[in-house]
Amino acid sequence: MAKTGKDEFVSGFVPHHNHGSVDYTSLDAGHVHQCLDVTSPPIQTPDQSHIHYTEGYVLFENGHTHYYRAYSGPAIPVGNGMHVHYYDFYTTEENGHRHRIRGVDQPAPGDR
Image 1 (tube, rainbow, N blue to C red):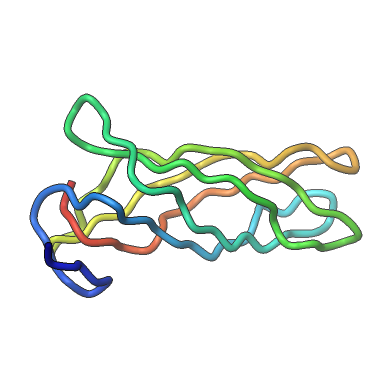
Image 2 (image 1 turned 135 degrees about the horizontal axis):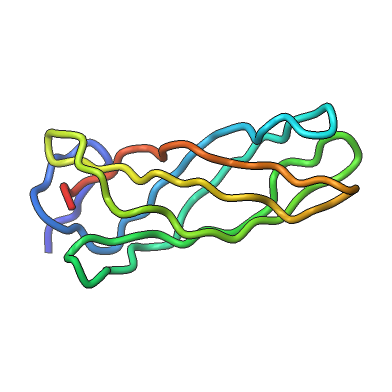
């Protein structure tokens, strides 16, 4: 079986891939946190697309951290046999506040 790298363009669904992202949370209680994330392998959906699960902690800032668990949206083709996922979720509440994290992850091979 041929291996697929991060710069290879592939039509269709590519099993066993994941996505990374680097984002900042929303500004709440006067601060933000950085979120460095790597998703689970793909979870196929009935419509022949897929989503990804993720969980982890944002970086320690302002004396605390927050935990998150979330699923991405379905695959969004971006051309040349690559796709991304949109995500939009909230962290746990700590110190009387929580943060929103939303954005698009890094492209991965496969167009669905």
